[in-house]
Image 1 (cartoon, one colour):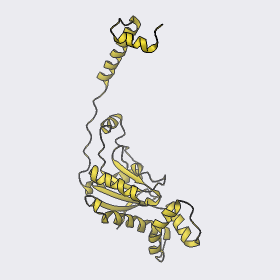
Image 2 (spheres, one colour):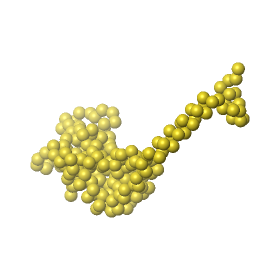
Image 3 (spheres, helix red, strand yellow):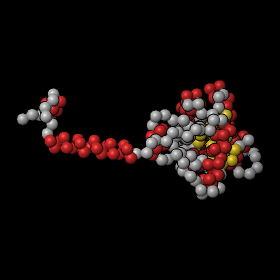
Image 4 (tube, one colour):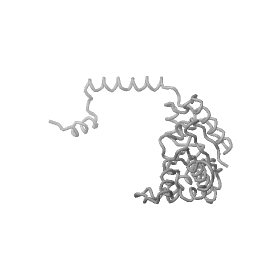
Length: 237
């Protein structure tokens, strides 16, 4: 009795294929040809915003749609996925927070392949984040980097609690507190909501740190704040 491998070798040397297998392959080939003929052609990739200003306008327009409850959920179709399988061409880098309420693709009503999103708690910078931004700017030619802070940030709240009480910060969370503390100290005496002042000051600091790095001179870098209540994004000065 022939083994499976021996039967494969036997057939590959030119023996007559059993009729039932010939029928199976004929039917399969016909099915593939029919499916291919009926599948619509893959759409060409849309042209992305060519400038930082156009990219920012696109993000803000998408956010207005999201806030109004009228998102388009663009660029999610199957043809789009086929195009992107060959390469990506995002038009903006978003450095944001890991908060589950602030997913950039939804907040800005963008789709697959539109944004290069880098998320850490409190949008804290480290070498991996900076390398990721550099990949977007230098390798993918992205013209815009947007740093997105948000209302009621948990990393900011933890930082303020530490500064108020002096309680030790456990484990890896200490890195977040260390990075956000300078912004909290700069705004401690400012009247009003200390947490929100810290959110704004820290986002602006991250923006300025990226701007100052020679690796990112090819991109325009801005900072913004997302309001959880209104769902609107506001640019920071």
